Image (cartoon, rainbow, N blue to C red; front, side):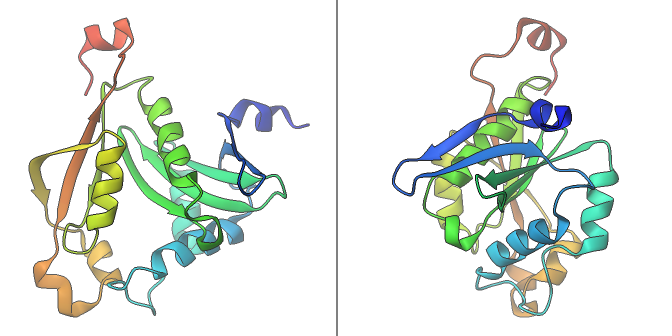
Length: 195
């Protein structure tokens, strides 16, 4: 077994109801990029506000993301070696949480979220993510149930994100920032005051 594979595995999640096990590993340029793209795009295209003619991620965008050393893209891989989910960690920001439609409703999204948090909390006392309140009320509740809180921080969407949303919503959308504190910050991180 490849030593890098062993080093990249963070944990294993087994869903007893479906008898599927998922491993979380860090994606790289040797991962199955086509499956990553398919998983992300299928998950995001189910959102009614997204444009169907504009993919969430393309091959050049994925390669650029993986080549950026500040990014850590984690993927959930099934025991059949199929990529079933993704989550991106950039410093203390979490994004690109996606679960393949056939694997949704099994707790895999929460498993991915906790895996990214564990990695972020090694260096930061707080992690954050962004949601669009106009469309993502269920997602906000999901993050709240995972311990994220909103402190009334908002920001406009980037042009890249606006391009993926149907134009009729552009004047109404913005990003809500949600944060989660490390429940047990390491002493050296707490002393440094990283956030």
